[in-house]
Image (tube, rainbow, N blue to C red; front, side, top):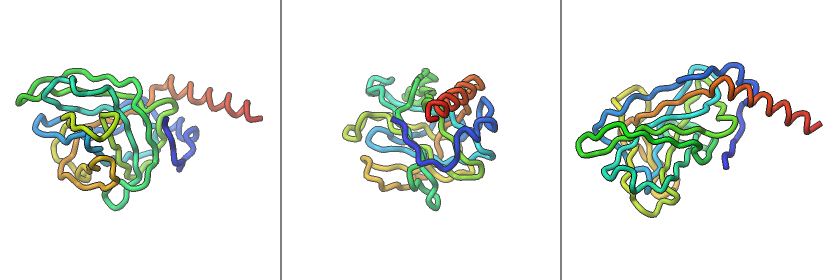
Length: 203
């Protein structure tokens, strides 16, 4: 279940959000990756304006196709704490997860994943640094060799990782490939209608 530590009113930002790509941390470099079953991997992002995040994409690499993946993908968004993940802002189980085979490179199978954050999306503030964290297993007990693909060096902080869900984040020295998208206009319209209905029920 998704949970929020509210900072902004989502409906106030719905009109400011527009459908499409709102953040791009880069394409996979087909060179490296960091394990995301015994570890949780995190990458920072910052948007120029207030936005509702509707979905995300990222690149995963593995050497056994996706046979080791149990179908679980969970996400967290953290506030920034001096260049590393800090307090929890939002979290949930990824919805409508869609892996698509990209290519085999260096003996590794690369997949492009997309997923939705869930009903209503995640409202975030412009000019504020957050961290997107991903974990691709139902627990942290077995290393399934699924890796978040690295991207080319950029101006963001290096990726951080947390071993076996202990809450001890450490930099791994690389940035990773991912994109963030706002909801489609129809989804925002439905969000507004749902909010109106909720207000009427409360009266």
